Each structure stands twice: as structure tokens, then as C-alpha cells.
Amino acid sequence: MEEPIKKVISKREESAPLEAIRILLKQHTVALQPIVNQVNELPVYKDLEYYFVPIQFMEIYRPYYRPGKPYKNLKLVNFDKPAISLSFTSKHKYTIERKVIHGDVVLHLKNYRDELLNKSLMQQLSAKQLDELQQADQLLRTIREQPDAYQACFSNYYHYYRYWYCSFRFFDDVAKTKTSTLNEHLLKHTERIRGQVHERLNIIFIDPQYISKPVPHDHKLVDRELDTFPIALRQGITTMYLRKR
Image (cartoon, rainbow, N blue to C red; front, side, top):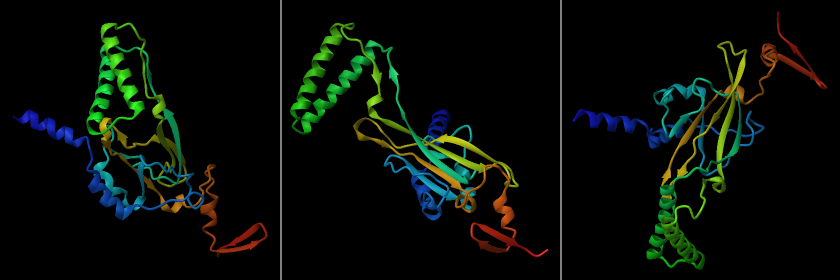
């Protein structure tokens, strides 16, 4: 009796409680803007759910940080590495499977035909759908009787699946004198057969102090040196900075 219970608990742990996390995020999330902040054009994509959380709230999300065993529906993109700059890119990801087995071809055709048949019970099919139903039925019969009649392959190329990446810079030492850059893929909502949507969200932690101003890549930290001068007098393109000895 104990073993099945353990399996159920383990399976439940694979998914994070998104609704509870969204309630937390309403209290902590901030908005970023290109130019105003160190971030390129933000992705506006209905299937990509992401939030920016300032570093001071990061510890609240530690219970959801599972290195080596991440949740399937939640990604803490840069836990312990709050971003001082961000950029987002997307790639067209696809697969093409050329070595297919006969059973998979038959199953795909059968599911395709059955989906159209089920739809016809609820509504009248269009002329195009009727042609597709007739074609699927004929193909199914032919391939069942003559397995080598057609060459097949599977691909999601025309699904135009966009795989999003987040590149972020962060301070790599306690003194905040060195920076590094990492690139992480983001989770997106996925839709399965019959319109079932699997929700997934991303949390990106930021350092509000530095994401709002440029941090030099050469690590000379000129900006922080100039911050130690309380008086600034600008003349043309040159500013004189003063502080008491």
C-alpha cells in the first residue's frame, strides 16, 4: 500500500502550484522597459508567461528552487544570479523524423480521420474538411493493405514553434566588480490534442539598482568611482566632480 502513495506524491512534485505562485507574483512583479532599463525589446507572445522579480524578494521563491530536478511547469531562470541586463531572442525549433515505423503512420492517420469524424457529429464539415476526411480514409485503407505504398516522415516544421531564450548579465562576485553572462531557454505554454493547454511560467530575478543604468563591460567601475563625488559641475561635454578631502 505504501509504494503507490509514494509514486503519487512524487508525480505531484513534478508540477509547481502555479496559481499560488501567481498570487505571490502580483505582490512582487515589476515592469521593465527598453531604453529605460537594460533590456532589449521584450517578447510579446501569448504563449510565453514571464515575470520580473527584484532581488529583495528572491528568497521568498527559494522553496521552488530545485537545481538538478526542476519543475516541469516553472522555471526560476536565474535564481542567485539577479540580472543587471537582459536580452531576449527566439529560434524556430523543429524536428524531422525520417525513420518511421508502419504502426506510427497508421496511428497518425487513424487519429486524424477520427478527429474529423467526431467533428462531423457536432457540426457540418466544410467542403475542404470533407475532402480531407475522404483522403484520410482512403490513405488509411491503402497503407494498411500496402505498408510500402508510401514513404513517410514526421515533422513539426510548419508549426513554427518558437523557442525563446533569455540572456542575462550578472555580478559574479560579492564585491560586484566582475560580471558574467548566461543564456537560458524559457518555458512556454503548450497545446496538446483537443486544445488542452499546459501552462508554464518563468521568473526572472533582477537587480533594480543596476538594471536601470549601464554597467561597463571593462570592469573599471568608473560609474561607482564617480558616485563617490557628491558635487558635479558640467561644462559642455565635460563634468567636474568634487568631494572634500
